Image (tube, rainbow, N blue to C red; front, side, top):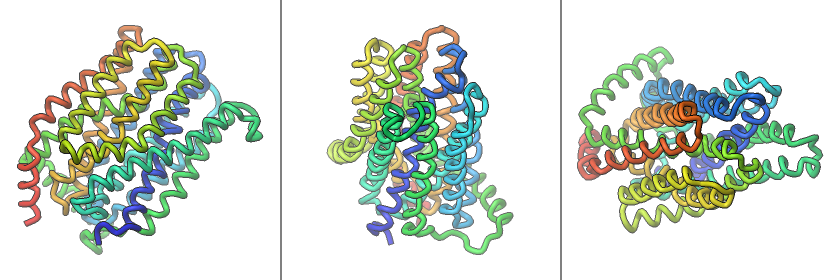
Length: 424
């Protein structure tokens, strides 16, 4: 039964759970700690390249796995099982960061990359559960609720972690370095505990029962090949995926590399952490309000507004000179970050056949992860070539421009009509 309150909250709380990784680890402490502790002695440009490379390698792995795993999950009724496996992988690797000693950037990058695979791989199956949890009338709201809870949940734990870092003595912690390592452990526990409601209250969508693992793999592979052919014929889906490929890459690159950029500009790490907290607590209400804004002007137009806003933010980031500028841009990012992510996910559900949700979300996440191969690597390479981090961040503008142009060509009504034909 769709729109069941316990299932909606159980599903949404997984965003609350794993967003701690996105905030404390991915966007917050890992880039700062990677530069100052694990890659101490390297130039800021070199460590930026290492971090971008780690993000890109993780994205390659997820992109390669995403479509076949989605197809297997559809055939074997295993969305929740796969979600559990990837979540456990992410939780384990996040906790393992506690053991990495100073100067061992290679080990830190390896654990981070594998943890990112767990985080992103789990999201494939988390996203694919959405059509079974919410009806078309509620899908925009539920998708936005998930992101909103993710921002507030991740933000709350991150706030505690920040206080641990700034005032370690108040927590009985030896120093800031130990506080950051303990923060990674707290993320692992948080992620594990708040994943439980989804496992209890969200029902596994029905698939082909009784398939063995080998049969599920074969069926999944055959279905994947079929889907590749279908995507070529579903031109509206293909066009949206291509547009999404570009613009979400820009969004994800800014999320992953903003703190690294601030460090390169010489901003104090305390100020960068405050800016990240601003993003989280602005993004919480903004994700829900942006859903209302989308109802007024239409989801597609709301996506255009967010893409344009990110383009402006990128240019202002290139021109940024003071910490106050960084704070202002953090607020601006918070206003649009949840909106563009939530609406992209819910907009996609309008274009795909519901009975192949995991399979098509496999493609959705695959392209998103292939995109995040390009963005951090583009930023890192441009930074290395020019010797200037500002030109690296400016290069991301190309991704928003390409995504906006391609989104213009997406016809939602035609996409919905074709998707309905697949169900009939």
